[in-house]
Image (cartoon, rainbow, N blue to C red; front, side):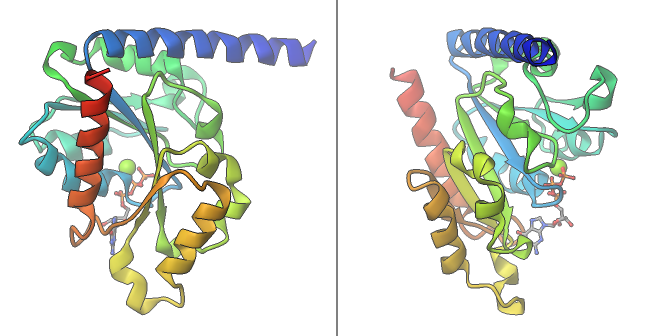
Length: 222
Ligand SMILES: Nc1nc2c(ncn2[C@@H]2O[C@H](COP(=O)(O)OP(=O)(O)OP(=O)(O)O)[C@@H](O)[C@H]2O)c(=O)[nH]1
Ligand SMILES: [Mg+2]
């Protein structure tokens, strides 16, 4: 009985995700679900990436967190429309789901957006199970988290279209080899685009921005 209920809830989520995806596609908006453990650098990466993208596309942001509007306030200073979803208000905490994103879409000026970032709640487990209506899933792994993480959280890595290895500026201070981390990611997901970046120094951010623009070009050209 319990299993049946869970299946029904997941099916409801999947249907709402399909509706979100259809609405975004009809408007030519590419949505990117940004996922990572807490503090890996999702918002900092957005702060570094958005100014590069703004020269070519109009960006919007949905921020997901359990509580506070801190992250939405950070990206809003870049002059992009940003809405904060607090998952606690929806009776769920560890991830965004499609109905929360639907609520966020209602608050955004969708006619003025080409590329929508959805920053998920910091968590390497739950977000993998919930589709939001996104076109792309980007996973951020900071090098301080350890090279065992792809093997320990395989579903998150397996579902990602791109994996960004962030905080690469810290590599000289750590006993971790970024190339080995790349190998560990490839063992779990051989097809994801893997990029080494530093949201702090900007290294690799232009490559990531170009990758996003190319993916959007392919999406809108069908
Ligand atoms: N050295 C270094 N620090 C970084 C980098 N990216 C982010 N940080 C720092 O890491 C901390 C967390 O960054 P956030 O961008 O808030 O991380 P987040 O993933 O958005 O965090 P949550 O939304 O709370 O899950 C901040 O102190 C950032 O300044 C980086 O590339 N290098
Ligand atoms: Mg954040």
